[in-house]
Length: 303
Image 1 (cartoon, rainbow, N blue to C red):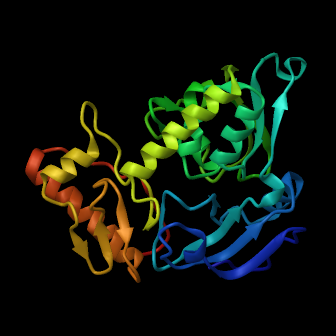
Image 2: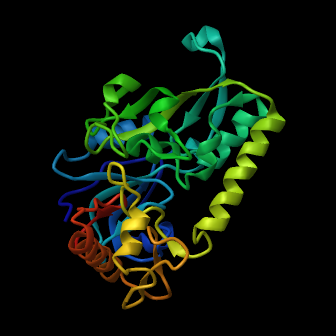
């Protein structure tokens, strides 16, 4: 529990804020405090004045996240509309062409659509990542053969101390679905580089990606996206399928029949059930194939 008085802020502070409505699984507990800063300066000042012992976690669209039923201690930072912007970058500003400057709260759909409108190719895959810039920069989000590490040039980050720093992509030391972004830091902006492209061709590629996702993934359910990382040389969904887990249920949680690397909340599943089902899938895959699946979905908070 947070002891003492929280710093003053210009943005919105909500105590004991339910997080289930803010995450795709629609399950889980509350944030001890939810902070929606007015702007970067507001976030900086708040973190600077906040007791250093209080944990801080950034929340995007909540698409790749299990919030445990016991809730999240400390402060959850959610970047709202003030951070959901995308601008083109002139060569004079950063020395790069065909680039976008994006707020940490901008969605992958907004980024890829803006790129299309300005004839910037290479960012189409972001259309398929159901998250915000802050989330997929932290996680090296990727799909359809591309990853954020391939397009990111720099990102602006507010550290837990409140300091605003700009980090080049090299300092994030990206690996598969992982970065070395400082703990408790919040990504408030990022710059992505593309290449010249025809807007019609870019739209056609985005349509292809959308159709592929619609056909193969349970997009119209309460889900959390890809559950497990693909092991080297393997596909997680095939390992899950071979272990006989397709359609398996635990309480209200289910392994998707449509795509076995997706877990589903069929109705009123608890986060405990969803996470326990994932762990049971991991156990069965290990027994069946000897492969230890790693979680791709982040699990946060108290059980």
